[in-house]
Length: 183
Image (cartoon, rainbow, N blue to C red; front, side, top):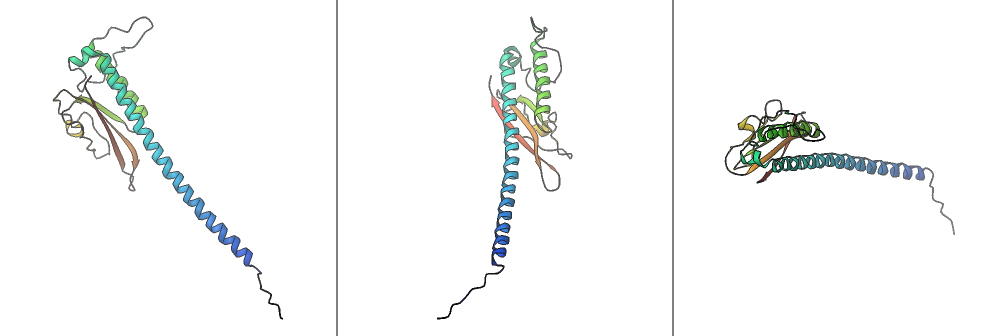
């Protein structure tokens, strides 16, 4: 009987190279999934911030019942009236001044918390609209054609817009969050 001896010279090196290639492709896939997950996590964080900001404003409105009943929260002008706690008592502010101050503080927080964030509170019978962008990719909340506040009805709408990400051409993709309430 003759014995056959198989040659295996270099075969182990090819196996190792193929294994490294497969591992490299796997790691590239994992890196892609990690990037995708981080992007979605960031988007979810911004939406959570928008939700918290909307609830913050509803709480402010509920705290100023007279301001709400007189319609002072229907698109108030954001103004710093210094209606803040000074240790013993707040500075004397009328309900309208308090509404304007609430919106000023809220606008400041929206700008700090959301990327290119803007918001509006208004009476709106059709709240789930608005958000047409200007040429620069922003939303002008003072333009009734963009925020779509019709100033009718008895339901208040809080609308927030922010830049979540950018398309392939570098144009911002605006996200919108809307909540309605009756204090």
